[in-house]
Length: 66
Image 1 (cartoon, helix red, strand yellow):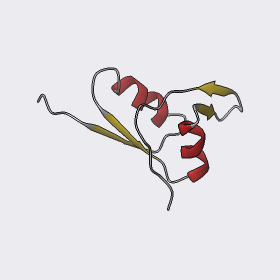
Image 2: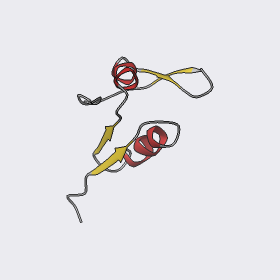
Image 3: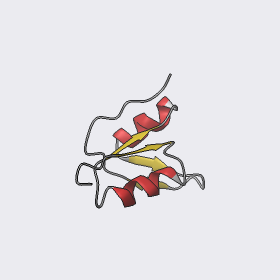
């Protein structure tokens, strides 16, 4: 089980913290269909459900949208 890679579908108020937690131990890919959300995360911004802006760090290119 040493080649574990995880994917989190949906980087909302549950998915993003979950992906961050998993990323402390495993490689993680996050996916979200909202292009604006992906763009904000790639810029290091997370505007959460309460409207608060939190800085985040993406370590690899992220793709999303339809």
